[in-house]
Image (cartoon, rainbow over all chains, first blue to last red):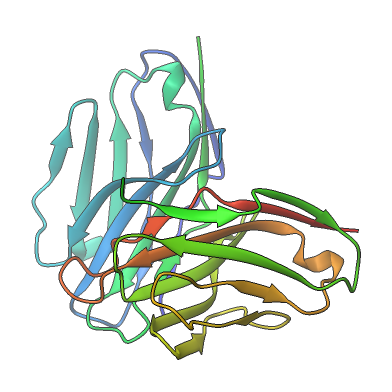
Length: 116
Length: 114
C-alpha cells in the first residue's frame, strides 16, 4: 500500500521568510512519480511539479525548490522569500507507474499562511 | 482551451435525494477519476475509469456510482446522499501513457447534504 505523510498541518510565516513543507512517502514500487499541488483559497488544484523516482536531482523554479531524497523517502518543497500570494494548502502526492489505476495517493495537506 | 469542467460548482441537498455531478474533459484523455477532499485527509479516490465502459472502485466508493458511456464524460451519481458525503469533489483526467499520473483537475464541486 502507498502512503503519503505531510506532518505539518499548518505553517504560519511572515512575508519574505523561507519555508519548507515536508513530505514523506511509503511505497513498495521501485518506480513511481511524486507531485506537489497547490490549492489556493479559490479551491482549484494547481499542478506544481512532477518528479520521476529515477531522477533525484533537485529542481528550482523561481522561488520554489524541491529536494527529493530517495534514501529517506522524502520530497520536500521550499518556498524562498515567501509572499502573501503563496498562502494556500499544499498537497504532496504519489503515483505508481504502469499502475492500472493511475491513482494519485495524496497526503493530508499543509496549510501555509503567509502574513504581511 | 484544455480543461476539465464540473457542474454544479455548489450544491445543497437533502438526505436521500438522488443527484448527479457532471464531469467533462476536452483533452481526449482515456483516464478519468473522481476524488473527494476532506479536512486532514487530503484527496481520496472514489472511482476511476480507464476508458469507455471501463470503471473501477477507488479507495472510498461506498455510496457512489459512476458511468463512462462517452470518452469525454464521467458523471458521479449519489443515489441516496447522506450527510457524511458532504465534501468537496474533484474530477480529474489524464493520459494513460506518457506523463503518467499528471492529472488535470476540474474546479471542484462543493456538496452539502443536510
